[in-house]
Image (cartoon, rainbow, N blue to C red; front, side, top):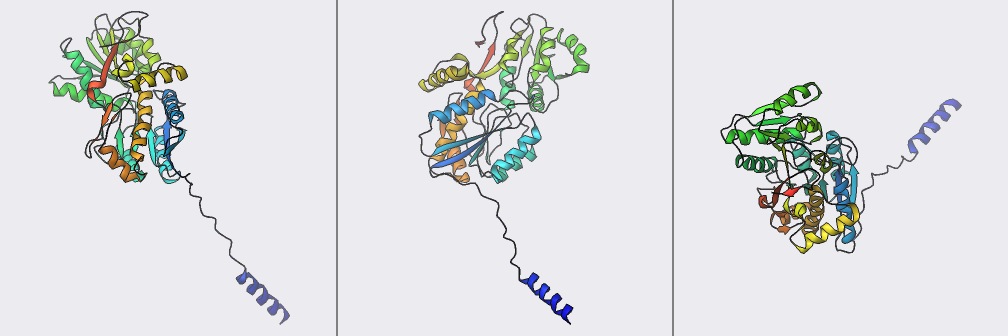
Length: 364
């Protein structure tokens, strides 16, 4: 009986113990009069272009507007050249960090999976490198689209020579695929049968031979995989490179026999025009050296978000304000509509080229 009484007492004590308290996941708090922006950049890894210039431009903008109201709280995340990490960090910025807006300064393929992640974020997501026009929703393309870039390159080539026999070169990396598709589609639209040449270690000798007999060559994606082959192109050939090209890589082609051309913002390349652009060029150069076009787009991304946040930071409201506003940035003048979210003005797109050895690029 004594044992039974003791067992019942122990059971009663166990049933009456207080349950352990559950600690809820902390929700990020926001300072009054601020909004948060997360920027996803390639600060390490092999993907081009490196995000360092964009980081410098956004930090410059944040420093210049540190007393603005509302004030942007900028968080920069290194996605290290990884497409999967870019997507993961986008979801984390929206769901865990509760960012009010996201800037993607890394090269991405804007496919159905990425588009769904953007819509689920339910905040403005601004892309500073080329993607297809999102067409609506929460994604905004600040750089020229692959179709716009293909149009500019092929219009220039067609004004110089016949396009028959044009070669599109692609290493089929994720960043090259959208450009390759846009170039080949534009050639077909012009009734030209495009020829695709694959690039890679196994095809390097074959590619050099192909380029040696080609008049118009269009390279998709960053330049580094193609530098050696481009040097084998004959004098008089037209070599068109990507918006994604690193300026340092292009500098290696100053002495190339072919006419090397690549796209960028007219205003950043020429260093002229409005007082705001001149101020950006001067401030950025003092801080980090000559700016790139993606750096200017990253600077503009924060300016666009600041304008949209003036009336409140609800994601849907910021999106609608961006769709209804035209903003003169330093890279271009941006104009969106509810059904068109590609904002780069084509007349602001310039083609750059070298005119001789040891010279700076000039604007065509």
